[in-house]
Figure (cartoon, rainbow, N blue to C red):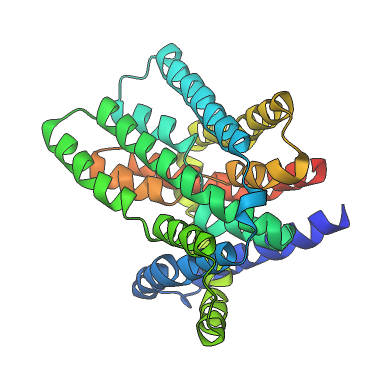
Length: 307
């Protein structure tokens, strides 16, 4: 339990520091936008690429873990769509954003941060492998959901335009590049390795500060009931479904731990971007990101304590 506490509390202290820095004017909007691009396009890809170049991929990869993760995501998504039907919500933007927020996790900033600080080196390498699969899956599902619920022609065109950035996501490309380099058995030059180490050191602390700066308490109060339901689906139901499937498939704990940590990540900030671009409900997206980020301190304590 001590390892859980020493992992979770410092991570969320950084998130709250980011929220405070934004509130007191230390992190202006222009800085947040520029820093987010720096972390997303350079620092996190460097972190993922370096981890995968050093991993023992041939012995660490377990296809059953990937399959069970995909099934868990699809099961919870089906429940979210069913929930939309029984609630009889007529607003398509609300329905689309609700369904997307229940399965679209913040893998790059929070999922990888918890994996990095909680798991050992091989565990983090497995998490980096799984990030590529999950990012492709949840981004494609997000586009499909928003196109289905927000079916105006202009919106549909924007939806198609988002598919290319999904497939060209820098974190996904870094994961694929790291796997290819690893399997090639080429040596990593020490200078390049040290450069990647220094650059990747920026990724997690800066990413956590940016997550804190994106929290909106005003919208959270306004959309609290819907955000609470999203938090239940994302933080508790999705990891619980995955854990049950991992156990049924006989996947070892050391193998499924990275997948469980990633699936337990709070709603991704990208849900806000996609809601804005594809006609989703922007306010609900921000509220769900804020609430799930705050509550994930408790949910991660639960899941890591179980591990």
